[in-house]
Length: 350
Picture (cartoon, rainbow, N blue to C red):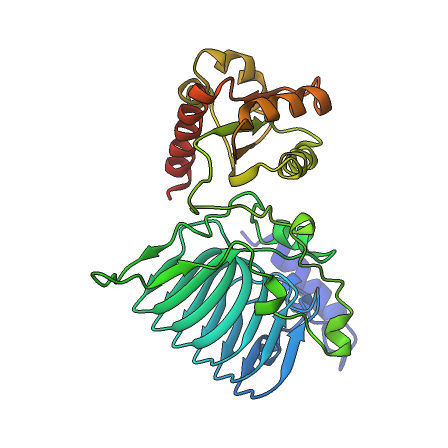
């Protein structure tokens, strides 16, 4: 028995005028814009300022290699970025969905955000970093880290396109695969380091069109102290639950607390289940169970003498009616912080 569809195709072909070719069928992949690999490589440059504007990389992989005395700015999100054999360069990288890998580089100053960060066979790098996982160095020396501190209007959307949270930043939690006894291959930049002194803004007319700020209070990523020694033994944990204004509320609370002289130590955005809440919030967990299904929570740790009282006052005055978890006392706060961040590190595999 013949196939109806094969007969129909044969009839259609026979009815086609002689000498006229059958139109080529169009597939979705035929309509994709062709990618030229040369648009995603900076190679063999010397004494140049180069870059890509927002929208010009759009999630592609990027390669930077064999560059010397260059200023390089990628103002867009990308899939992965590899930097090989570069010397005395300034490098800015917008959000990278996967890994940023430096190999055989020296005397470079960088600002970047990524899921994974790795350095191998490098020396004298300065990196203002936002990294969702633990940064790793290997066979490298004189690597210095600071917290990512940068803004331009498109950056928040680029973080979303790269699948990165501005609150997941383990910039100071560095792991050295090849430690040397009695030596430290990495350190933290001074807390008062001025970003533009290390990573200057671009000077070409094309790149100057990007409206950049390196002020801490405008940074897309909250500027945290990370693992710097604390100046006070008092901390306070605040957990905000998912809603329409969660990110805005977190930013507002950070601004208020920092404005009153307290320090932001660390932040985290992570999903929680009811059993997780029980371990972290104890007897108060049932109050928050209905909120957990709405999305990830955002946690903020503040430090400073009077941090708990100061934070509770701000929350009551400004966020009255918005349900949050706030440490109840100085004595309880230490356990709150440990419980939440131990849970979060396990959850995220850090």
